[in-house]
Image 1 (cartoon, one colour):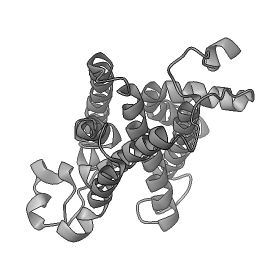
Image 2: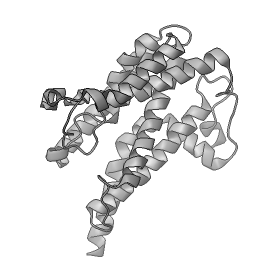
Image 3: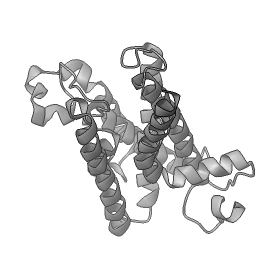
Image 4: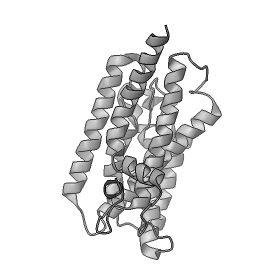
Length: 248
């Protein structure tokens, strides 16, 4: 088990990032578990409007997107690694299409037409020009991305084919809406912070391997976050549905 869950020293993966991503996955699973219990009416919560749950969603999304930005810098540190880029992009885009198709079948009125995977896929191209850019320039652009919806939203962007941009005045009905503005700004923040770390070396994000089994499992989850993301909701819904019909 240790050999599987703990990356060897020669690996180019950063264990700390895998654990951070894995932690976000665990919180995402908990969040969706509560959401599913709410859907099955075992609990009654206003998840779409409650400040606590909205904040929890924001934190979880921010971790995923920030780590995506950091990972891009590390992947292209020795020059453009197009093979790795396209392999990763195809996997993320394929996952996004599965999420859209699955939610369209199950809940067509609120299906995921532009969720977190869609955002990461598009933001990957947005981030490319900044992977070697100056930290301060990238940071300023990231902040602009984050705050632009507050000052530049317009009814023009409420059209169905423009909603993915994020400058809407009326958010669309979707169970997972993660538009480019502001969320690609979090990816760029990850890029900027990783560039700063690589230039200064103030904070070490490598040379650490967990010995605690919880950390090791979380690391494994972080390494396979896309697969877990795709499978966890069908699994959760299936388990709750089985319990639901059993208790009837």
